[in-house]
Image 1 (cartoon, rainbow, N blue to C red):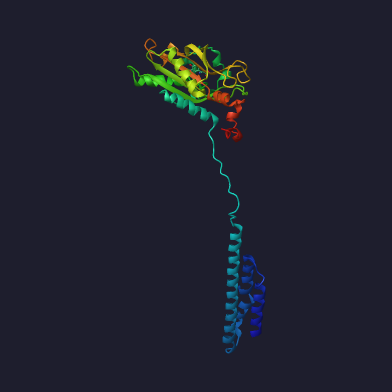
Image 2: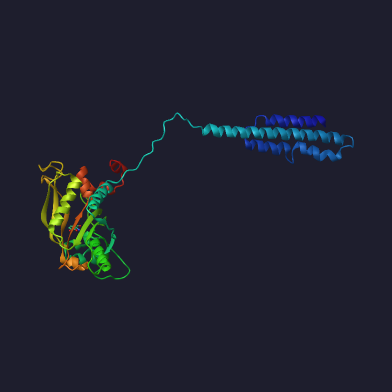
Length: 353
Ligand code: DAH
């Protein structure tokens, strides 16, 4: 019996020796220490032994059991240690490797231009008013004195929004310009101050939408910055002074400006302001298409009907308004030839500013 126990121990330890993973160790434990192992058979057989043999064999079997359990535990510890070692090895950090560069974002070129516009008009006492992008036909057109069959109202220019209720002549739409904000602001203002409303000096920036063919020069979405000044005794001279000052601060003291007569339904008289082409200095080049001038905004004296719609008595009050496209201004300043870059979300474009 003693030989047998020795044999059991030797076999088990020999089998344990080459084991190098947990799975194999578990199998080994089942085979050599489990319920059906040869060692357990010995324990089970103790009952049939003589009185003298029983304690001797029992003691020895116990010693074998302890020896195997100890060896198994040691093996387990070693395997664990090895696992930790491997993990550390794998996660080792090579501090001599070059660091990973962090990229810092940059502002969208339109944001740069918008901020400059805010700064220049802010210095002149203009405040910013944000109006809504979803408008009604009434505010986008009718209250701005667009005659019913004005070409700008054509379906192709406007994104109309379908609504559950039938709104008749006043459908919902995406604003095609920032001008409807003029009416909202004037109405709020004159409701707040029914008597003697204080003068207004605001700019209204924001996104506009037009149902147009996308080309290098026109997008279906773009920003505008609207301006509005209303008060007693405001003249076309104030308009010219304000906008010339803006052009000089925006494009440089030496830039030339000119006003050309134009037409907008909501202003009378209306004009467009050009600045001398800052690339060719007026000689004529590809950017100004030979004209020597670049058109940068539309403007005019607020039409009496529009003043009236805003709650101002046109007999007492007058005002001027203007509207410009910051993307267009950005294109001129940076010689960007395609407006589609602005909303293409290509970082290679945006990172340049
Ligand atoms: N709303 C005009 C447009 O989208 C721009 C404009 C022109 C705005 C003259 C004005 C203005 O306030 O006085 O083309």
